[in-house]
Image 1 (cartoon, rainbow, N blue to C red):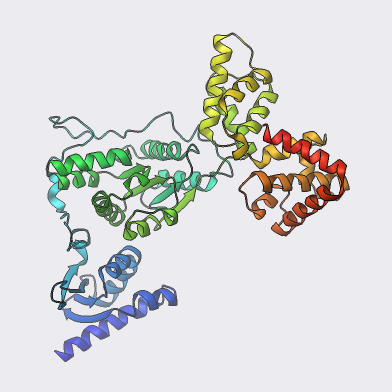
Image 2 (cartoon, rainbow, N blue to C red; image 1 turned 180 degrees about the vertical axis):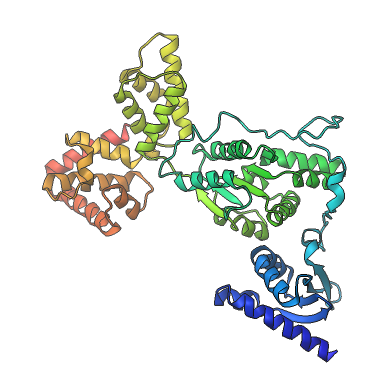
Length: 482
């Protein structure tokens, strides 16, 4: 027996040598030092890992490396088997459970209600939760909105990373490092649009693939119906048939442990089979609560990309695009500029304002002018003062001092330009939630120390110079009443 133990340890040490050369020292110490080699039978090496979490993490993050090492040391027929020590909650006695690598999905939750996956289940008919009962043919429609495509998803600094990742996925679904792609942002910034665009572009490039968009609320309702009918396995099998799953508003799964467990198994299956997952949320994985930690950790396996509030240039592009798509090709640039400066919160609000202006213009046969835009925006935009953009602040300050906005971004040290620049920084700090570094970046790539100095300088001037105090009070009133 001792000889066999020694043999398995020798084999495992040879594997560890290969593994150690291909990962960081910290990862090696954390994930591989605690593992023990406990058995060797023909071409099967058995190792003991401390916990189920270790097993999941190693399989999810180092499986390709492990497979390479095992094949190199044990040959083409080499296999790896896990043993995980478990203890009885009643007696405290310890035993172990054996996990062959091929059954990772099936055995993950031995202490819960496991979902066992049989590979031959795909050979029989699986009910489609997107069609009415009684329809036998499995015809999975993508549920994608053809109007939400990449052509009308306007790119800007606010969304460039997420858009580029989405486009890369559509060219090579399941084969990029962006799996899952986790897109997050506040409401109205384009998460759903981008999710649909990824699905549509994937279908365009790979018509043979099965792509499905589903909102998390729909997913929950489907799970509830499956649980009531004792058809959870069929529900899971249906989602296994897909190649690309896009699930929107994942935050709706919060505090729903059973639905989360089902999604956890689906996630694992997709990851092992190189199927693509795209997930959207109103929060980043690190900010989410009410989710099992093992699921949150998987959300971070690929790329997490946020969509930010669009800057002025991007808002102008969005407005032009929306007007063009609505048949408006000839419009005063001043109207576009006004809308871009006035609506600063999200894309959805821009769309709503444009629809209101077009409706007013069409119904009353009025030309679209700045005055018409002002009338509609005053009714449409709510709480703008609390969600003010630095672009708008810079415009107001520069207009007050009759100075072109582009001078703010110059390297000029002229006193009047410096004063306007400092004033913009001061009001940006007062009226936005941006950090000093973010404000500096928007004011000519200045650092946070420069912004802090600018704000203190303006505060000193308010206390010592009556004329400047009056000017800044006037600007303050304009911003408050905007």
